[in-house]
Amino acid sequence: MITNNKITSENYKEELKKSVKLYEEQPMYLLRVNHEYCTYEVLVNDFPVYENYSRGKLATAIKINKAILKSGEQTVTIRMYPFGDILQKDFGDDRPYMSTLYGGSGVQATVLKVNNWKNYPATEDEHLVKTYQTEGFDTNEFPGADLPYYEFSFTF
Image (cartoon, rainbow, N blue to C red; front, side):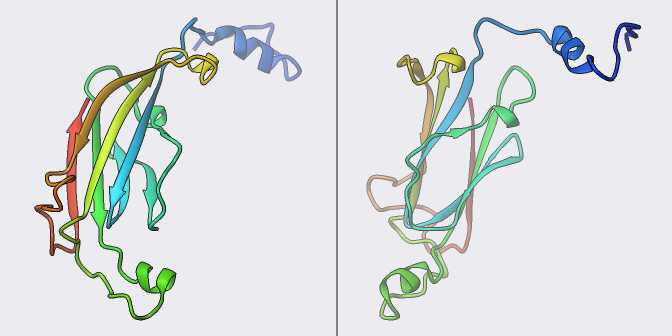
């Protein structure tokens, strides 16, 4: 630890700011998730970054930098769950209770990188890093159909 005799209770914030290294570019990683017939949780490097326990779609990308602690390969894990009684709550009691995932269930996750977060969205600076989707996402042949839970991971 470096001691600085110039630090006082009045100037400690300013002195601390001087010791922080700033970079011209500040990259940000984002995750866009599209889901069908399921609720889900998203973890990056085993750190929870988002959960969606509703039918609603996510319009805004999820910022995931808080879960990236070092350079190199990163792991995204998505845990899928059935709707349960969500359809009954939204549309009435004549809708079925879904205790398992459906054949049309699926998730598509897209990782994006923005090179300079300070200027986003003023610049159209999104770069596709990777897209991953569950098997049968477009064909209604999800391999996790009839399961109460399904988890998958991918790296970028």
